[in-house]
Picture 1: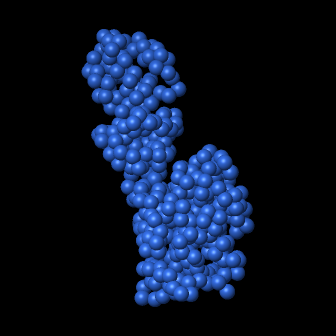
Picture 2: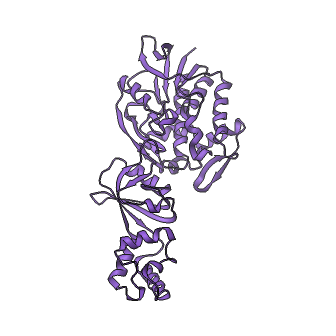
Picture 3: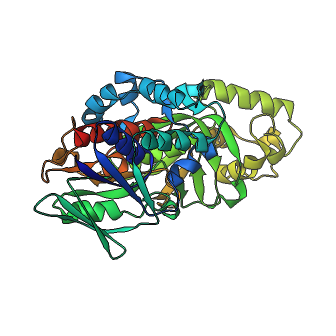
Amino acid sequence: MIEIVVIGAGAAGLMAAGTAAAQGARVTVLERNEKAGKKLYITGKGRCNVTNVADGAEFLKSVVTNEKFLYGALHTFSPRDTVDLLERYGVPTKVERGGRVFPVSDKSSDVIRALVAYCEEYGVCFRYGCRVEAVEKSKGGFAVRYAGASLDCDCVILATGGLSYPTTGSTGDGYTFAKRLGHTIVPPVPALAPIGVAEDVKQLEGLSLKNVRLTAVDPDGAKVSEFGELLFTADGISGPVALTLSSMINRKQNISLFLDLKPALDETELDLRIQADFKKYANKQFKNALGDLLPRLIIDYVVAQSGIDPQRPVNVITRAQRAELLRCLKQLPFTVTKVGGFERAVVTAGGVDVREVNPKTMESKLVSGLYLVGEMLDVDALTGGYNIQIALSTGYVGGKAGGL
């Protein structure tokens, strides 16, 4: 019987363990935390956006890095397969906005329970509180060392996660093991993270804006843009549009952001709207004439950026000054200082170079019997359930191949 050690009991590790055991392998999971799925537990604000109904080519459009590598894994274990597996273990699901799939209960603990039940059905052995210290290639396979003990096995499946949310145990140990075994590690960076800006936005903290467009521009003039919801933090910008853009700019420097507060109106239409409001509030000061156009919390900030005296009567504002206001409304500027930090990043971009991994099996091309799944790999996707599905799909493929 094949002996397999899975390191990590997150989404990828649980899927790999259960699937390998279902093939007849004897599987032991080593998990540094006191229970399985610690990071999975907090995903989706505790509701666990477990997958997305997008399938095939549509799904791959939301993969940021190395989408072609994932084609086979997603075909082998699809979002539909995820839903079927959860329902098999008593966790019905529902589909929400954007194709996002959640458990009907809105409890991530139910998803974890189902994945653990999958493992337990096939006799997987769990050892909690075991932080692995080394993975060494031996003549007969591998020696996995932890807490003064050693476990010999035929195959190792690395499913330790990346560097995001380190308080859940994701501290990059797997990258160290893979590197020591000869693998190239693409330098990890935060992905799906808040964006820090140089401007003082403390006064805007907590302000949520819907139906806005945020555009990132690099020094060469290349642009990426996202439409949707945005949230200001004490030191920058978060919310869906910022998280998405963060994954596209996290390896670039000197990025500028421009916020379009009125993307539904072109400049001519917006100028007419401004003139109408100025006519309506002709006897008011400038700072008191923007209430119909903007949320109260952002008015002072926009006024300051426009350079117009906030006490200036609206009826004496010049055409040039109105043009400055228009610019602020359509291109409110911010300067990126950093993309999040791993403590606030949803996922990690970077990891084991996928050119060194067989996409059909997740087995290392360099070390026979070593499998790499989930955030161990240099793959990442946008928000919406895609990243957990990638973990489940790669975990399934790696577990199935390792267990044969």
